[in-house]
Length: 495
Image 1: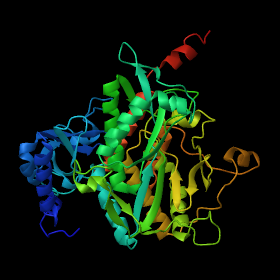
Image 2: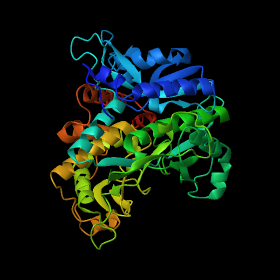
Image 3: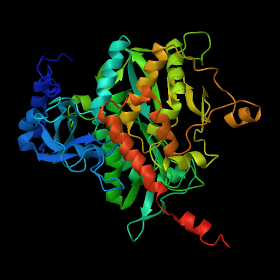
């Protein structure tokens, strides 16, 4: 996109060539669809969707001037264990959220309402870098890092597809979870059928918001479903994962269920992962997929997917499994930074229940292989890598940026990933293989992130401060809490 030369990041974003035409197209959609209200939304460092609602009458003014919200909203406006607001205090300025008109889309469950994703900037009146990109805006940050990667590597860009496992839980009389809706039988159509009213409503809403749904199944935990859509540009895929979570929350409200994205609500059964299937491409073009609709309930970009081009992860030798040189370098980058990446992919205290509950294929060891689900990364198909040390609570914008930094390090420094492990990793270890473990607690993972300058650079400026503050406080709160396990284990242990 060509940018007009104006003085601040905010002004350059607002005055980007072609944006004024997109703003007009949104007005046409507002009038065509009868939109009365718009959610202006962005993403916090933990992946929550935050923002404001504004009547559609004010679209043009909001598109130019944006809206203001406290900086601390990028950290959910939560306080730490000492009573301080995480990231920013009450004296901090207010961010400016500027809508990205190409993401405008009607909400199918209330057709009077639409949503638009936003990019966040520092306040125009700040004394330092007024109108600059807000570091703690993880969505805007992913766009910037992806653009830098493209420029550095001759147009290489990241395409991603995510596997959003989650659980549908019954709601008890007290409103709290009362077990999974279905039985823990993996791939059983009967259990999939038991959740058909839920899954079909999710699919219907998802298609109406631009998600090209391609397959789904019942996984092996109670009420656990995985519904997949077509892979795409990493930023657009992250937007779709956030949209999917919104859709699931709405369908849960309609069916008096709980849409649970917590990774491990039950021990003894599989947790919910969110494997990232990734590849680096050159060229290609966007194609609008109307998904059977004559008139789109949003702008075309919400319904577009990148197609064609050259997948640089494809094999370039006679070995049909072995990735090409760029792919091997990219794997080398991930292997070199897997410990720090785990802090982003497994970002909660609960995430590590998944790693400790052995026997359910969650990756524990820092290795890679072909079709090997016991490793942190596997070549799941020619030209596609499945990054596995990531669960259902992931912030996909932070994960995408971190993977780009790891890939960049691998390509720039020609990092060797080592020999792929084709054996079950546990059997390989019994045979004498020395394998490093992934971090096994959130505290350990945060320490690995703090020591890794490459992955930490995926959170520039204030973002790392906010993320570390938030997650370290989460770890400290857990360590400062007496649990039922403590009482059961230690109450009667002496004399």
